[in-house]
Structure formats: C-alpha cells, structure tokens
Image 1 (cartoon, rainbow, N blue to C red):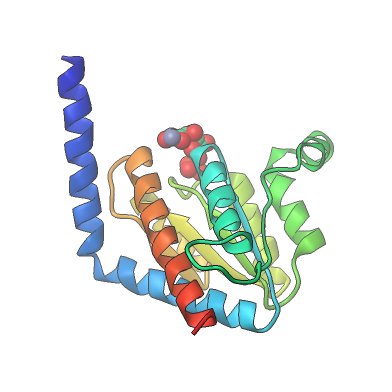
Image 2: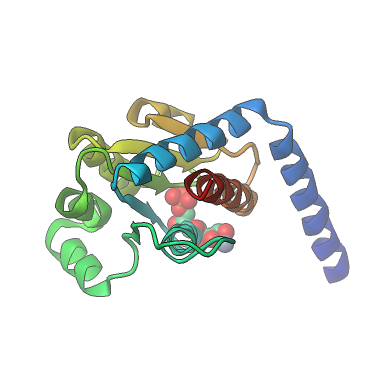
Length: 192
Ligand SMILES: O=C(CO)[C@@H](O)[C@H](O)[C@H](O)[C@H](O)COP(=O)(O)O
Ligand SMILES: [Zn+2]
C-alpha cells in the first residue's frame, strides 16, 4: 500500500512537471521574470524574496543560487531571503503582527528598481500579499509565484508565475523547476 502511495506520488509529480513544460504562459512568465532580474542586476539593484514554510525554503534556495552560484563561476550578485533573521522576524511579528514580517523588511531594505519575489502556493498568505503591496508602493518590481488559486495576485504583481498543479507540494516542485531555469537564464545572460 505504502509502496503504491509512493509510486502514485512520483507519477503525479511527473504529470505535473509535464503539464508545466507544456504551459505557454508559465514559460512566458519565467522568461519575463528572468529578464526583469537581468535588468535589475545589470543596474546594480538587488533581489528580495519571501515565502512561508516550504516556500520560505524555496526563497532561501533561490537567494543562495544568486548570491552564491547556480552553475557558473562568477561574482556574487545581491539577493536576500527575508525569512532567515529570527531576531527581525520575531520582533516584527511580536510588535506589529505576523502579517508585517516581510512588508516591514521590504520597507527597510527595498529601493526603487529592486525586485521583490513573493512566493505563496495558495496566493492567500497575508504576509506575502502585504509585502507585495509595500514593494509596489516603494517602486520595486513585484513578482509573484503561486498556484492556480493565486491568480488574483496579478493585481499586485508586475509578473505572476502560476504553476498549473492541484496541490501545494506539486506547485512548489514546479516553482523550483522554474526557479532553476530562471537562474540559468540570468547566469547565461550576465556572463555572456
Ligand atoms: O511545504 C509545505 C507543503 O508542501 C508547507 O510547509 C507549506 O509551505 C506551508 O503550509 C505554508 O504555510 C503554505 O503557505 P502558502 O504557500 O499557501 O503561502
Ligand atoms: Zn513541503
């Protein structure tokens, strides 16, 4: 039984990846996000990222690819995951509420022309929606990564990537696949 559940998970995962590979709007959004990041980094701007749970891990993963490296040896480029400073997170949550944990950091760190990437598979996490709002008000380029239920985030985002999958884990897997493709595109463009 357990073997079957695991095999089923693998098969569902493969189907989700196949659907993603054939989704023209997902590919276009990935391309647009890569282009926005390339422009920002060329201009000396930085990339801020945030998410909750597995998407917090994804935000950190993507920031590490950019400031460290994806595949190529090259200079470090500025990227910060807003999920890692427990002193800042606890102080902001304690004093202003959990909804402000990322918005407050965008307020302090974000400058016009920077990118803010908010990752929420449901499209409903209040702290990500609030951070996108602050980012937009402050002149950052706003990017959302979500799943099918997050389509309404388009109102707050310059670019919105929607992973076409029916559950959180599969949406996260597509996010990571897209993020790696975006990192590859950024590195190839900036190192050409
Ligand atoms: O990783 C997973 C599920 O795969 C969970 O930790 C998941 O990220 C958490 O439930 C998050 O709080 C979900 O938030 P969101 O993606 O809806 O914004
Ligand atoms: Zn997970």
